[in-house]
Every structure is written in structure tokens, then in C-alpha cells.
Image (cartoon, rainbow, N blue to C red; front, top):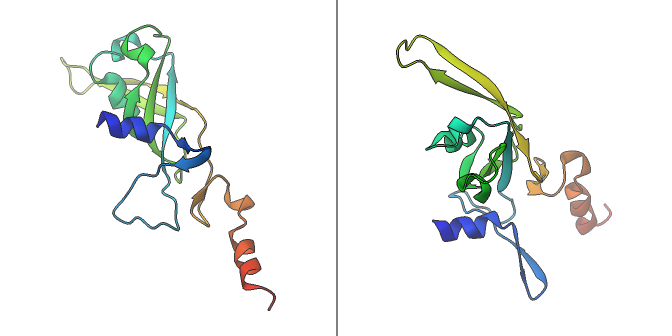
Length: 154
């Protein structure tokens, strides 16, 4: 699993100066469409210290996407002002800019307390829902224009 994560988190590999992108395989894989799943680092600024223990950080990250890796500084408790997790994010969906963290009182399970945690993202790639490729938005899609050029004048 660690090898898979290492490959997946690094978005671009270079082989003899040629870029190669890694995509996650899915059962409905189609080579003409790019999967909207991509690894993205998320940051939780002002993250409570007590949630760094155990599964707290991963549970919060899981509300946004599938956690892949926790930042080295968080694992070793070097940088505790904010938490960073690399997650598998579906960029075709709307980004969450905050997530609700709630707690149940052990003595009185009817009492639920919580707070909104702000979420920041690093370099989320654009995804075009028209041509199903990363790197641009629908407004900038040239997919139809390229099809017309290949077909020639009518």
C-alpha cells in the first residue's frame, strides 16, 4: 500500500524528459476520459491538538476524501499549528471549505458539541465536465473545436 501511495501522490513522473501522469484505475476505466480522482493536500489551520492523536486527523480528512498520507511534520509532532493530509479528491465535485467536527458527551449521549473546521487546498487541478479531462474548465474547453478541425469544413 505504501508503494501505491508513493506513486499516486506524485502526480507527474518524467521518463527521458517526457512527462508521464499516473491515473487511478477504476472498473469503468476509459482511456479517452480522465478520472476526476487526484491526490491533493488539504490543510486544517488551527487544528485542535487533542485530535492529532489516534484516528482523529484521519477521521476529519475522511469527510473530504480518502486519506492517503499524513504530513511528516504532523506525524512527528513538529508542526502542530495546522494539520496537513494528502487525500484522494474527486475534483468534479464542489470543494468543501469547512467541515463539521462533532463530539458526543460520554456521560450524556444526547448532548452533541462541535465546531466548524476550515479546510484549505493545495493546487486543485481544474476538471472539465464537458470533455472529461483535467487542466481546464468547461468555459475554456476546446474539445468541440478540435473535433470540428479534424472533420474539416462541411
